[in-house]
Image (cartoon, rainbow over all chains, first blue to last red; front, side):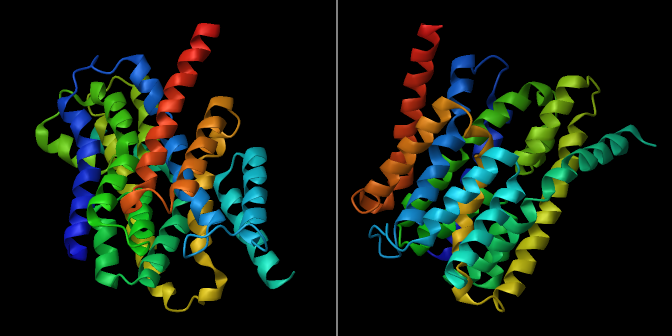
Length: 104
Length: 231
């Protein structure tokens, strides 16, 4: 599949998930139970991107020693829990990562 | 002042503080996309056609990992399934709109605009209130396109050893900060992460995002049910 076709399909599926409920839904079609479960989607999906990017190297092998990403991610997470601030989380993670690879 | 325009401006005003984290996210997307090998036009096309940060980053991540198109598209669908919730929540406020407005609003229904307009909709009965979501959505759109463009330009100057790809897990981590304090969410986060990490090499077709997401969502369903029984 060409890159453009891939981009267009990804755009279509993104649009359709946004549009389908607005277009089709009658008010009470989603009960509270389904709403509750859908509210867990970020917690269920995002870690599948986060964890491999931190713990695995480019070839997919475990990289647990000499891996500054682990420490930097832990620092970012702690700052995130304390500050509840998205920017502070990203900046503290990047700053500690750069500190670990350039200074230590 | 025209009421529609006033509500539109209110949407812009309300969503603006949420644009601060979007700036680094857009820059990172632009830089990474070029780094992975997409052309500047394709990168700009992604932001214009897809217009969804998480979707676009997942696209990049899986594309660079050599996943097939089908897996990339379904993973993007899985990431987007949260929009079903947004649509369901705002649909009751938009049910009287013409189809063309439903299409326009859907394109602009991103996380930040949803969060702010949902609050506004609950408090206001005005028939032009959809202009709030329109204003918020356009604000997100302008910021996203601008920062993507800047990322493309900057990408040429940023050295690879800065390890900017680490910004991807960091950005997603940052999007979960509110969930780290809730026990069920923490369990769901750990399950998803473990399944994805251990499944990375074993789940066929790089479908680990989907497998981990579905497993974790089932866990959420079971845990919330158990939690209710205990109450």
